[in-house]
Amino acid sequence: MSQPRSSYAVGTGLFIVLGFAALAYLATQTSSVANVHQGDSYTVEAEFTNIGQLKERAPVKIAGVRVGQVQSITLAPGQDVADVKLSIDRRYDHIPQDSVATIFTSGLLGDQYVGIDYGTAKQVVAAGGTLARTKSSEPLEEMLGKFFGAGGVVDNVGGSYAVKADFTNVGTLSVGAPVKMAGVVIGRVQSVRADPVKLNAQVVLAIDKRYDAIPDDSAAAVFTSGLIGSQYVAIQPGGSPDALKNGDEMVLTQSAMQLEDLIGKFLVNGSPSDKKDAGDGKK
Amino acid sequence: MSARMPPQRNVVTQSLAQIGACGLFLLTLLAAIPRSFRYVRETIRQLWFVGAMSLTIIMVCGLFVGMVLMLQLYHVLSIFGGTSASGMVVALSVYRELGPVVTALLFAGRAGTSITAEIGLMRATDQISAMEMMAVDPIAYVATPRFLAGLVAMPLLCCVFCAMAIFGGHLVGVTWLGIDNGTFWSNMTAVVDVHTDIVNGVLFKSLAFGAVVSLIAVFQGFTTPPTSEGVAYATTRTVVASSIAILALDFVLTAFLM
Image (cartoon, rainbow over all chains, first blue to last red; front, side, top):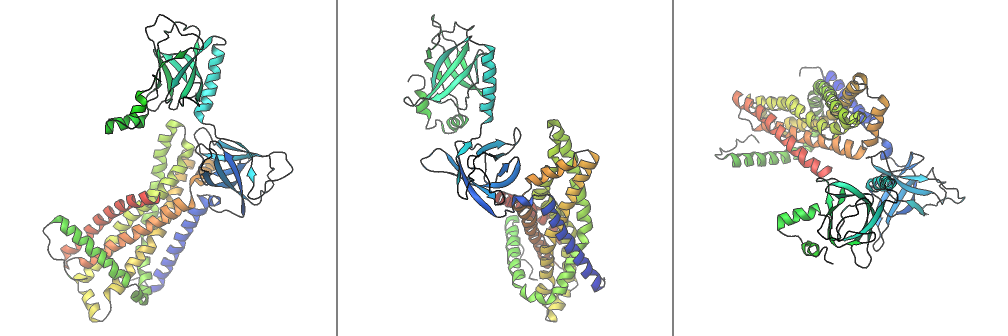
């Protein structure tokens, strides 16, 4: 404390300078100032049917290089497409009108971003214009489903028969998911679609021809492997002497259990969707 | 402010009385800011004392925190083959939590205690009363400069701490464990955001912690019984109360800012 006045003044000055130098170092060297700094930019709209996990301020890239960011994501009322506004650096104002905006995922589990693939048109997209051609985010499950589903088809070429089953709720069951009996895979889910009239999910199961003696009163249920695993269709054999044939429909079905519903039932002793589920399978 | 607190029987009412007195003291401190402009030189001297003199401990601790964090992360992430992300995790955890919190804890131990002890001894040796006799406002001359110095010093110290932690992480990760230098920096810059991580995390949190720690330290110094035992007790209470306040406030700030 008995330091001469000039000594502590210089020391304090040095301390302040060092503190601000450290701040400048943190701000410029360890973070991308580009994430915040946005030069002159213009806005382009694009409509996607599914944006997946895309978030605002996600990067927009051309040829993998960041050229802008996602400004806003809105869902217009009464429409089922997401309206995504992209804010793109003014320097890149020669994007052909027929360019394709695609939602990509960086790596297997990374964040999603919008990639723009250049088209060949002479006209460029003006500020406030719309990129008409878009490709939506493809959920990983769907891609895996296609991949494994295709593998399954090759496995039993011409060797499967189709059986229909209606569910009130298929949960996250996707095309290509396994069909199991007694825990063994006997086929694949061929298609999942909503029935526009009956308002339920119509699932077509492709079952291997070798298993042609499944009783026609067997029940189909959507189960989940483990607590957070993927979903599959389990077939519980009935007692009828007649076997399922190609094009038959399975009458007894059990929908996917939703974890929220289960917890709801457990907690409040019956959730609102209880009654709806009770009519399941009887149609 | 020199009025002794009335004896309280209950621990709860006693703590409530402490908190209430501390809040009133804060108002007195803030009201005295215009009057303390006359003592700018005193504020600078306090800044030198609580800030510049704390640099050594902050730098050394920051270096070791960064080093040990990198070492731990490397071994955990190598199980998943994600060692390239360790630089990024070091940066995020230091900016958002460890930097402000550890700096504030060290600051409470290094600067807070000496503020309390100094003011407590001033009271014990009647220097405060002497100032009042000489028509020098002890709040404006003793309390406010120390409070303001703490407020300014904490964010700066926290920046230094974070920079040293990154340096320590780089030292262990790149130099010793062999993570690629380019991956280390590019992963870090890709994720660290100036607004959420550096402004909200480093600067705002450390400013809040600086205010809390220096308020507690000055308050404890001013309200201690003017005996040597009282000063010892007040110094301990500064560390205990500051630590609890820092960790609790950290949770609240994180919940609101993130």
